[in-house]
Image 1: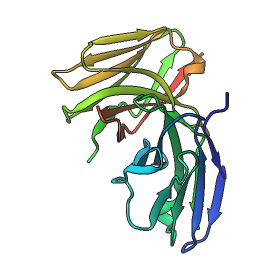
Image 2 (image 1 turned 30 degrees about the vertical axis):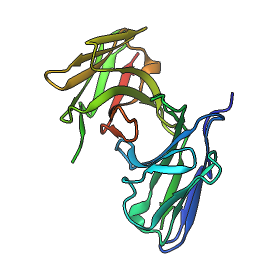
Image 3 (image 1 turned 90 degrees about the vertical axis):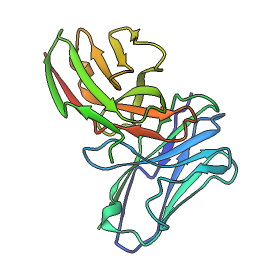
Image 4 (image 1 turned 180 degrees about the horizontal axis):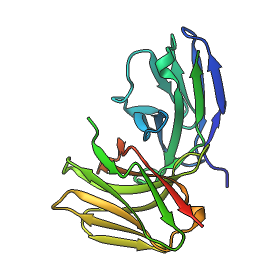
Length: 113
Length: 112
């Protein structure tokens, strides 16, 4: 079956611009996670959804970052007024409710010039 | 503060050898300890995971050893193959499964 998909695969933007990153989880997975992975580092937790609600958004670095999951499936990570330090690979993962087995997407590589 | 500390940063092993990667943690509330394998341009993929009520778990060539008192766990890859060359991450989470804390990764190279 289809895995987690993320679009776009690459995004280049200019400092100060707004970007949206999309995640399509595996069908039936109610849990969805966003992570940020900088070069040479492990994934860093950003936000966790259970269904439509953000159950834990404590990893979002500041109020420029926001994520939604309006229908409990597709999620969008939104970054306002991008900064060069936001450049990283943004990973999405999903899992069944109650399962800790996360399935990761290939990521979106964001470059802020 | 790094919740999970991983070492070594890189590792080179001969084909057929044993690869060993170590992780340590401080938070005794952690309840689930997975290892992930990541190839360039791909997302991490779950390899094997353990809970603190057992000291060892084996799946094929991959074994996790867990030392609860020392708050350490390690991944052993037996009979390492060139196809195992990848970056490996340890991680930990509490029983709520909300946040997963990842180590900084180990780049493994298996030489033919």
